Length: 416
Image (cartoon, rainbow, N blue to C red; front, top):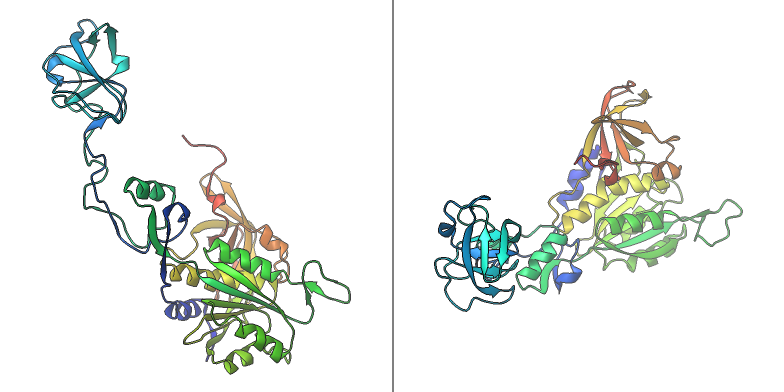
């Protein structure tokens, strides 16, 4: 087992052990946010025929030669074509057809004129302009050609994708299934939220934060409860998680006399790959895997450490499992609102809020950076990366910030 890896080394080790998860077939209407596991080809052209993009009149552009506001061209209205209908015959020269948006273009017509550019008088329509050939006509197959590959594996299915699947007649689709993540809390001092917090007991908040982070990453989680600082209890709970895709434990992975998680994992056959990452918060992290079972992340017990290590290692693994193409948080450059200092040796993840200053961002620490201060995470919109070798980031200096809250990239006022 390797020890004291850099963040980059640890992440490489994690992703090197992360395999693509299996696929399942589900209703396309239920596939929002899922990752496509198949190529989707179109069985037909969309639209299937030339059709009108406007309510107006279908006609031959040549019949409008010289038409203008002062000298409109007069055409006989031969018939009407509604959406979902069809033309009864070829449109002859000097004729127009009343047409509605989405209706097929009558044979013989090559152009549509908007209703607003015409005047109707009984069976005669006067057109006050000379449009180019093909104006306001949607050509057959201009969206999709028959046989064309429309969606590729690895695409995250959004609203437009679901609409496209419906257009192609696909009511079911193959997508990567959601990873199943077992979440375990550990420690004699822990109680559930409604438990007795006297005598130094604390609420096991990590299980709630980690379950929410799993959901944000597209995974389903199930809770193994609170394991006491007893190897037998830890073993019993871990055994129940061996059918999961990922096992996430918080606490019990350091070097104290009551930290039993690593030894129990090894007893159960887990191959431990590394322990300890040169980062703050979150150094005492263990990673391993069962050859015929889950990836295992033993996260630190402090709430901020657990969340930050999840962000850096578990989240990318869950996204990689699902075939996501982008597995890392977006980053921006931001000016530090204050001078930051530390001892060199570890990469620090500084919880910051972000303010806009014109087109630039200013990063401001969210207060006490202790790994036990969970409120600092509720206020954090990003994690400022304080490089391992650096001792200082001067006030006003640029730094890289991982975005935790994507809404921070939005603007309060529209630029349109």
